[in-house]
Image 1 (tube, rainbow, N blue to C red):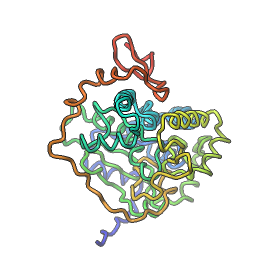
Image 2: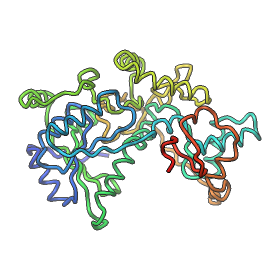
Image 3: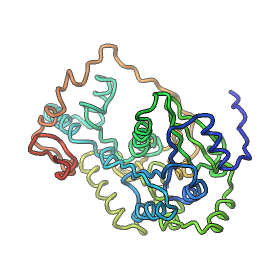
Image 4: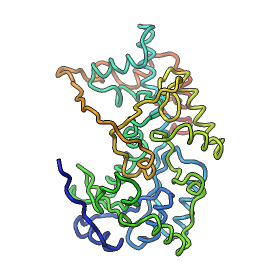
Length: 374
């Protein structure tokens, strides 16, 4: 199948944003900001053409990124909206209390039951293995093949929540414009990007005002306008706002993070120990098991729109055969089989230390910490 020719553009950033607005008439315009070098140029160059900066706190940023983001927003005198992923990374790796309560109850009846076989059983029985009354599966640390899951949990859900919030009081057909720092010169994959595109099946429109800029043009702009660089970008040569590790060169980057941010990486190592103790297979950062095997060595997944450094680190993907999961027509509802999540969570008398971050309040509700209890 022949791809359509790329739209070549000699438009200025301002003209490109004006075209996006004329074509889509957005009800709000946000500038996506990671704290990396490209996003600092975008935020400064187009500062008169968006409502506010948006930074997603993935919960995995290295120290200093949060402070830099706030200082930069103050420097260019623009409002800053921070979207929080909370403990989404920990829950993705370790699962949640509801899932572990179900697994323990099943394991008591079948001592030989493994995590993988329990997940497979849920998949056959309900057509899915996670979410709602089933709880959150302990997937372990993401490797290349699980980047989509990490992107969805840490960034995409927060962005979609902002999209819906921006449309409140507007017609369903209303659109929201997001400015991105994507450039064609960054990678072969991004060389195929269009200046303006609408995210499939959503009302989110992405415009890339600097899409035709070269690395030299970016460096010249930063130098000419004295655009500050974050300490993380100077040390890591990326923004440092997400360290899910899915596309990381784990040996090299593990040593770098451990040397530059020892306290930060000690938290990752603590998470690794909990995952290993719980029997989670991919219990090492980067999506490795205890034997050094990696989950999804090759991936055909496309890195997320907000993952500014993933594409440069992604290895060439091997052709993958699409497999369509079959779901039985008579699959029962998880609620019909399991009852309410509160009842499920009480089926096990003891929850393993893997869920040490979870607490149960006097009302019987489940919270991530004691402070969350009303």
